[in-house]
Image 1 (cartoon, one colour):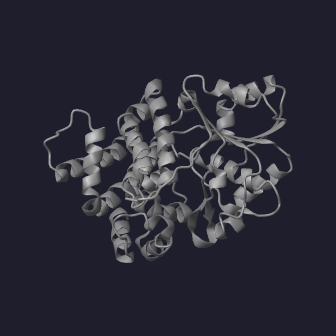
Image 2: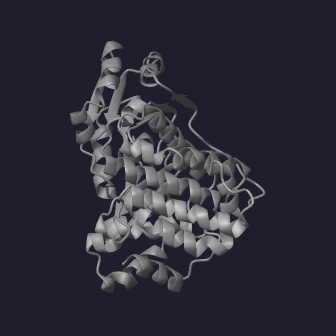
Image 3: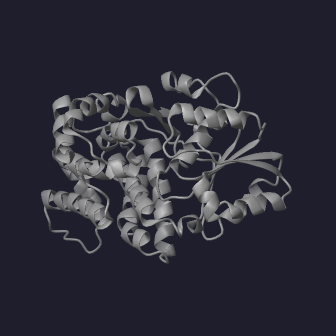
Length: 385
């Protein structure tokens, strides 16, 4: 565990039954032009209607940018940001999932022509906050509302890369369960397991510390005990609220610690095969946890004691650890998320490329408590091919 550690998180977080309505107070002083980042699906579902109504009631000019593809590459992100620059906005609002929030965060630091997204791939710390940002997540989820990260595809490398810059941390976050009430099960499940991975990876990270552990364990408790009900019962609003809070806490844990080999090895799956990020993580979750178990057994036992209600306190560390991994695996299966790359027609002859791309994600691999060699990565990928 680190002996020196710190935490950076959004300055102002509003959560609860009427969180969206608090937008009125936030925009009431000094805001003249807003750009809303979202996607066409959310617009068609009416999920952006309430924020728009509040903005219109306040008489503030706004523009909507909705041409944001799922998991954009850096060219696609730059195209949206170029459109944003023409608007001269003094507040960025993102209503959406991780891709929408990530592009909005990038826009908040790229409002001038000084740098591009491509420049930040080489030096993420170049840009500074230019426009305040407000995040309204529509999944529970990516945790992007809490992090200084933006993930973009790099087509020439068949890889997704994380741009990490503390200036991208949101100024405001609104967590409202109504935003995820009617989320389709496949999306709710994939994004929910993404948040689950954030929690367990941050808790078992080599960079874990007392601050990240506080958020990661609470996130793990909220997510593991609510994810199945939240994803399978449209009316389970309390479970959905707990998932939204758990997702946010897991995002805070990322900021204080960092994810590990699950995320590192999943990036090539999204970069080359365009497998949804949460699904990629779900496929790798059990294989990586089993690989890591010799190095994280004690931590998994601590997680068992916190998360498993009415558990067997007399069990050994090994028994508690094995049970935690089995429960992670069970969640993925119950939510009917694919557990094999066969579903996506990934051929075994691509194995060398997967290994090479996965080993490039050193930013996350260094967080893994058990060293991952190219041979280890090959063995893990073989399990899911």
